[in-house]
Amino acid sequence: MKERVGSHDLLLVTLDTLRYDAAQRAYEQGLLGTLGPYLGPGGWQKRHSPGSFTYSAHQAFFAGFLPTPIGPGPHPRLFAAAFAGSATTVDSTFVFPEASLPRALEARGYRTHCIGGTGFFSQQNELSRVLPGLFSQAVWRPELGVTCPESPVHQVEEALRALEGEGRRLIFLNVAAIHQPNWFYGGEQGQDTLATHTGALVAVDRALKPLLQAMKERAPTFALVFSDHGTAYGEDGYQGHRLGHEVVWTVPYAEFEL
Figure 1 (tube, helix red, strand yellow):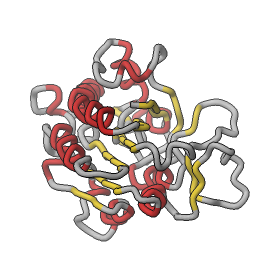
Figure 2 (cartoon, one colour):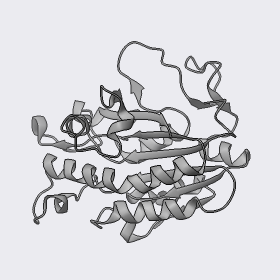
Figure 3 (cartoon, helix red, strand yellow):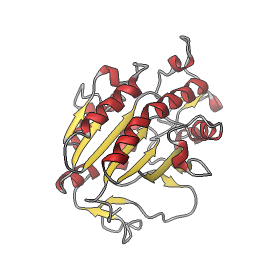
């Protein structure tokens, strides 16, 4: 990562609330026409999130604590805010004195864009302005949020606008579609289910195609696509997230060059 800063644009996509099992099943069934070819023959990496809900997970991500590979560590990090005693920063890690990756890249000439999705990016109150406030530019409107069935398309349109002009870019998308409510990806009004959760992922995958193509044509781009946490649909009696269950902590992860 240290060698990419300055020469590459960076695409960071959090597929908010996406479960690993749903993501991997969609890959195995050939439903991910856009992302699938970038995932390799084994599909998504299986990792553990540093947080069980959006706010905590993203605070960790922006400081360099991405989802951790399953298995004994230590696992070297791509980027990291400087911290004494860190056992996971190595020679190739991009280490910065700033408190977050967006601020670090902005200090190095990047334009940093946040395309918000879920409530913690809505900028409707002080709490929901904290994460977007890390970026030089941030946008959120209801049609980018969880209640709009066309949010993936609208979010990609915003990202494409953010690519206009010269200079390096950090494009961050907090994808809203998979977060509840997602019942409308099943066609009829009703409860959210694992099937509509997966349907939302398929819609997101379809919407991402023009963004990946545009960034590939614009400049060398390093892409990070992963979930911040999963969510429960009745497993062991649990519903939702912000809880310590395997379906919440286990997330899909991918990194690739465009």
